[in-house]
Amino acid sequence: MKPKSHLFYQTRSRRPVLAEARGVYMWDVDGKRYLDGSSGAMVSNIGHSNPRVLEAMRRQMEKSTFGYRLHFETEPGERLAAKVAALSPEGMEKVFFVSGGSEAVESAIKLARQYAVTVGQGSRWKVISRNPSYHGSTLGALALTGYAPLADPFLPMMQAMPKIPAPRAYLDGLDMDDQATGAHYAAMLEARIIEEGPETVLAFIQEPVGGASTGALVPPAGYMQAVREICDRHGVLLIHDEVMSGGGRTGKFMAAEHWGVDPDIIAISKGFGAGYAPLGAMIAHDRLIDPVLDAGGFQHGHTYAGNPLACAAGLAVLEEIESGELMGNAARIGALLKARLANLMQRYGFIGDVRGEGLLLAFELVADRQTMQPLPKELNAYVELVELAYEQGLIIYSRRTRGGIDGDHFLVCPPMIVTEGQVDEIIDMLSAALDKFAVRAGF
Ligand code: PLP
Image 1 (cartoon, protein in one colour):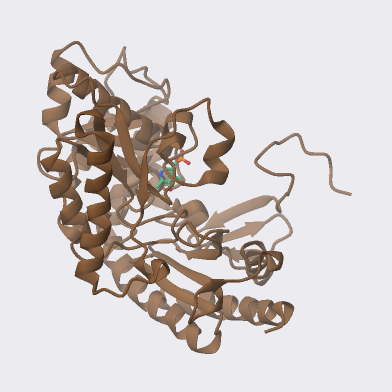
Image 2: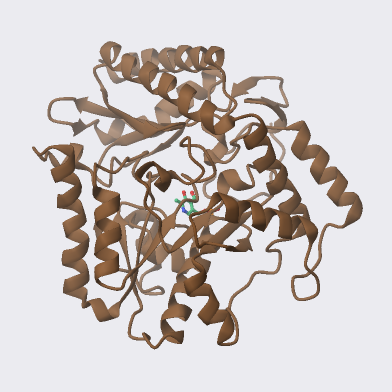
């Protein structure tokens, strides 16, 4: 019998105890090996136990692990902020550190709001977001999150924010070319801003490449540019939630670089600390930060934010990404993995779609690829397939939603150090899991 556990997470289900992790592999205490095909929750971007990061953290620990920000600047903090600013769009020179993705999003909303108040636009308070979307689990970030099962239990404790549909033409059955599709979905933003009253709208927030809520949704042609223009036209700030898509996983440091669109504020986390330390950041244009600082300061902060140990880890993560050319690898191997996943569609008629950018990839399961009808709920595919893959020694990530409608999607997002040989391993283990799933589902 397993000993009683005093840990408490989201559900009662328990997992094997982790013994150690190296590179793309993890081992439990019984010696079973797993290939980390989702980098945890799209976090461990440079793989586990990276010697450069461990050494940097060890060295920092011997100097100091904490210096409160009201008492000290820290050298790793200064150096990391400079590096992040250099990787950010022009004019975004200042970085506000936090300890995770929700905190980064909260910081973005609060900076946007304080900026509006400071420049005499206090009537602007609504933040439009998309359905589906995920922006975090704190109440402010949850108010933006377009995923009812997570958000609705907390109404009316929080004020839910207005939502527009995420661009998901493949599900909406639109018969338009990619450019027209982009214009169609962007027009929904403009219509909503006008409906709400532009003088009340503070910001629009979006994930440039969707994460777990949409399953790696990539925007259609022209959408990102059109959104930028619409925001400018109505004086609405554009916030990019790059918590999952940023940090290099898509092949660029910020996913929005693929479309050449600069937002006003960016939230990053996950792959930024890469599983070595809780770390995130809010990066904003100087034109927003300067008036707020001049008017007395940003009324926001978290105790552990920007601690020197987390910053030393983050700095070493960025150095590793640069020296190992890992963004190039994410683009190259990501294209290979995506093609291999797409090949599986020939063998498994119940794979409805394969999509994503770089190593932020997903596939969906459907009952019928023509009608894109979901698999019956009773099959519990999003749990069952993950369990079958886990038995094989492959970790993938899933949600019971397809772009906000009923169905199952699965994220396949190994660390950016993944090799071609390891892509073969992923496909072999996934195929074995899909074979078993097909038998169980009676296909
Ligand atoms: N934003 C996005 C796009 C995310 O994917 C997540 C986490 O999955 C968050 C915000 C929240 O990050 P955290 O769980 O670190 O608070």
